[in-house]
Length: 250
Ligand SMILES: [Fe+2]
Ligand SMILES: [Fe+2]
Image (tube, rainbow, N blue to C red; front, side, top):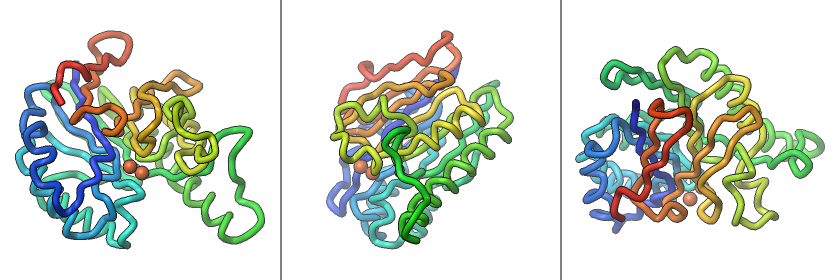
């Protein structure tokens, strides 16, 4: 059995020192790995990234992250990535990593993803170049995700995203903004590429649990939603993903 802690949308600011450290220092007591599902900073400047990186130094398990839209706002996602990498965090964007956890292996394919909406109410790469560009970003993320998932060889495969692949985990958000919260193309990539679990963030007012058409569990780990420093998902203990949110005091 493998225990995966995850949280997203911690939205670190310059004054966030101490916000997560007391909890993250104890992740190893509950989980084998910590996954961060984007919006790790408020505006993605170097100062905020450095505060976050310092906070992560105490974590005693491997940390794997994707960035979120907020981490791109200052136009310095590379700086955010470097700050995290300097404290040992693996940052994925259209990339994969494989970890050995005891006798088992966990492979993670990560991408921020992007919006576009869901069947019946989604954008199309049609018309203005700006609209085509928007949809092409989503398409590229989905294609990379599918191809990366197909290539993973491990006991467990997780897709780590910021944007949602399904509508289920957006329940509670306003319908008008669904196209800015995720895309069905990410779910298609999951179903074609295969995964044991997909984790995302971004939808602060959404729902925790969802599922793709072919039955891949989807979990929204946005901290404003889970109201915990992280949730732990157990893989392999039973037929289904077992969530252990309540065992960890906020
Ligand atoms: Fe967020
Ligand atoms: Fe976001």
